[in-house]
Image (tube, rainbow, N blue to C red; front, side):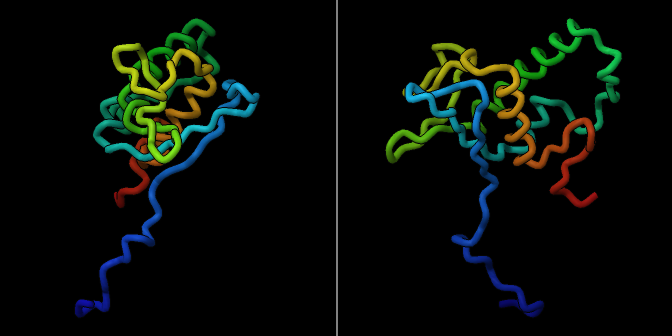
Length: 149
């Protein structure tokens, strides 16, 4: 304990920034929904994938054509490869399969599944969950909420 009455935290009490999400459109052989473990990644990785908070001008989604929305979603998901690679995992017995998804066979690990199996809606869910756990507020917040100021 120091003069302010502070003592080191018991490491076993620290809540890890981890969340398990259930995909809507991918099932197991038994028909069960696939669940993926999402966790925080380094903030710099998130920034490289999505740009610096606040650097993009707000977009009026209502004014975008369907083609523009598709192109924007594809670009955002393609740029999120590092976030998906570092921030997702599955469990296989007593071991962790990381990453949970791979973009091509050259980057596959035993137990990972092709990212192409995942619907766009579920891809957005996974990427947004990892970014939220990282503390990335995204374009709406234009800040890292874990930071003061």
